[in-house]
Image 1 (tube, rainbow, N blue to C red):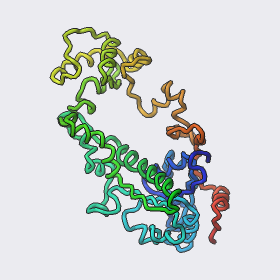
Image 2 (tube, rainbow, N blue to C red; image 1 turned 120 degrees about the vertical axis):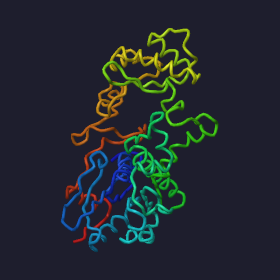
Image 3 (cartoon, one colour; image 1 turned 60 degrees about the vertical axis):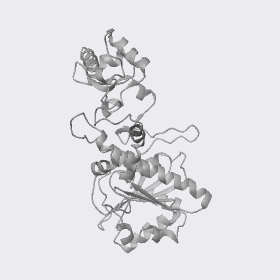
Image 4 (cartoon, rainbow, N blue to C red; image 1 turned 135 degrees about the vertical axis):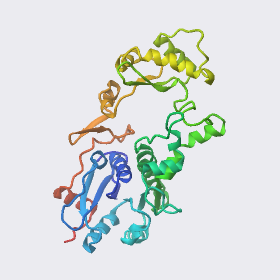
Length: 368
């Protein structure tokens, strides 16, 4: 595939969402990604595909307990630029496919490790999921309404933003450094670390006294009436983000609110009254009616769309922000590159002819 990573060869051991998402980003950027599905020895027994996460990849089934299959995997890794695994710490070493096992045959290999807790620390070997990692990082405590319990934001923050995306970034950084040193290295991508990194701005806000209220009572977490969602006449919602005063005044103007007695925007003592006035106005029309009213304004008001509605929005359609791959609508590769644009991704393939071509391209002989 074309793209800024064209020519980069990646071997990914199939796993749960974070690592496949990270290697999907690499594939979107033009890397040649071979996804290795684990089998119990039956030929062609693939685990169910992850759809968009596997786009642009080749897939081969190998039994990691079969010496011949391990030798085939080692053959691919010897020619790869990147190896990605998502085992608990120590599992890859026990299988004979840890970083030290590849160091002599491929010293330029970038070895990406995707875990929840990292390769060391008291929790490294314990189980967990996105909600656990973002809880320990401090990110989960930021999400929710005042006086209510924290609300998990799907598995976006830990698995994908703090996990797979940071893994892809780490791999790319290691590839860049390899151009100077000629040596590969291990990328230890832990979701708890990545989720914590995403809260950097809030740490700065807190240190400056700008994020010191309980959850749901700060400016950017729904505490302020000018940064929140509002229900419309049809039960759907709009998002309001007019933080700057001119944008806030423009929102009031478009809403038809002309009350000289309204409290000052930044006076938190008046936020409850201000919220009630704004909420009453938004209840007068449907979400889509308000979307049309605010469509070309600087009021920072947008409809809250479902992921399935988002692909139909005129702005997203104009930018081709969603594409169809294998009959499935999904987000397009991002970001975009002016000189080395990514190709339209294709569905993953386990076609024998495609695998034979991949072996030839990589210079890897099949093992009978």
